[in-house]
Amino acid sequence: MVSYKELGLVNTRKMFAKAVDGGYAIPAFNFNNMEQMQAIIMAAVETKSPVILQVSKGARNYANQTLLRYMAQGAVEYAKELGCAHPEIVLHLDHGDSFELCKSCIDMGFSSVMIDGSALPYDENVALTRKVVDYAHQYDVTVEGELGVLAGVEEEVSAAESHYTKPEEVIDFVTKTGVDSLAISIGTSHGAYKFTPEQCTVDPQTGRLVPPPLAFDVLEAIEKKLPGFPIVLHGSSSVPQDEVDTINKYGGALKAAVGIPEEQLRKAAKSAVCKINIDSDSRLAMTAAIRKALAEKPAEFDPRKYLGPARDSMKKLYIHKIVNVLGSNDKLENA
Ligand code: G3H
Ligand code: 13P
Ligand code: ZN
Image (tube, rainbow, N blue to C red; front, top):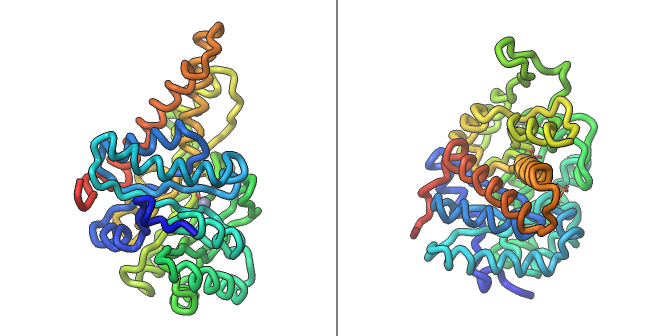
């Protein structure tokens, strides 16, 4: 058993309370490899932002759970080396799907876990989430639960249709489970294809697809039921069209990829939404930079020559999200 406190990590409790009060959101960026982790930490340090490093079940399988945990421990030391005396870094399990997985992460030094029982019948979601909370809280680890279903198909997270969170269920769920934060479904979804072209309109000036707005009425109804309670938004990539264009220009084939407009995320961040999950945008930035570097220098075979530009591009993206979308810059307690 390793306590996250020994690793210099923090849980989400204080961070979320401050974010809800201050009308901004904490970035939750997924990482699977060293370059992503370095880019996230550099961006967080430069902007003086708290940050959540998220590890999915797929990331654990890809990169090895032990390595990822040591990387997160390294991230704390790296942030200090970059000049941040008191970094606020959370190591969070993204979409945990069983008690055993959550327990394993808690025992390894994670400071926060998500138990995603959203696909289960309501009572089973409550029971599973309660079990994780009871275990996690013994070690001061915070827990995110989920109500409502996001559409989207990915390796470890899949659902054909979305179902908005029912505001009439949230008080009962939060009370019975004791969760520290609640992920909701208001129209976002995972991946780079969040809406079909049929769901969108076309901007006459640019010819780009414009997605339908998020269900802010559902968010408002949830906030009324749970005033000040930390709300989490998954599936919040914006799918930058310049990255999509670069990928396609250099041999990619991303057709009709559409994300959540940043304007809507800005609006959400000012509400009780205090954690915004972004993974796909980083994947797009990384892929675009690698494709470009390889296409422009076909004789290059030193991975540092294409992973380096990819890391620079992700860092730029993370800084942009922190400063221009979530507003979590300059929010460290002791910078
Ligand atoms: O919510 C899902 C995250 O984007 C993680 O995706 O399961 O492919 O690692 P993954
Ligand atoms: P995106 O696919 O929109 O980046 O969402 C990531 C996410 O919700 C991780 O849990
Ligand atoms: Zn998610």
